[in-house]
View 1 (cartoon, rainbow, N blue to C red):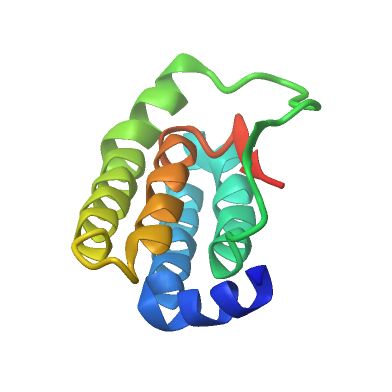
View 2 (cartoon, rainbow, N blue to C red):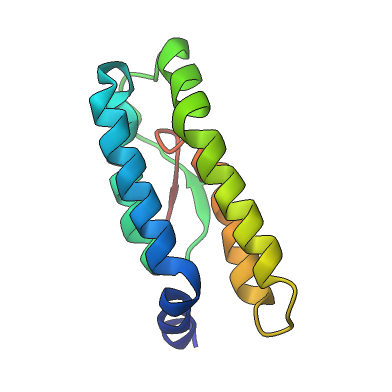
Length: 122
């Protein structure tokens, strides 16, 4: 069932959201201090293509934690915009009965939008 839902997800916003994550990953590379978040962005872009059957988890092997200044810059320049995007698309999708499972997936991804260095989908 999750395979069918993932295929439908691609047509109802999954490709757009993956593109957003890729753009934010590129932006985080441009700001040198937020490079640790770039890898999380590219992982999330791949995960946004198939979110059904996965859950948000805390990454176990973080290595060096993100510095507060880089986390602050991430939230201001990318995290808040990704979170708003997921919330708005989720609300829009929840307006119909068919779209409710897709909206729930968007709400699940909001947590990762604020800190892709710390959280992932598995």
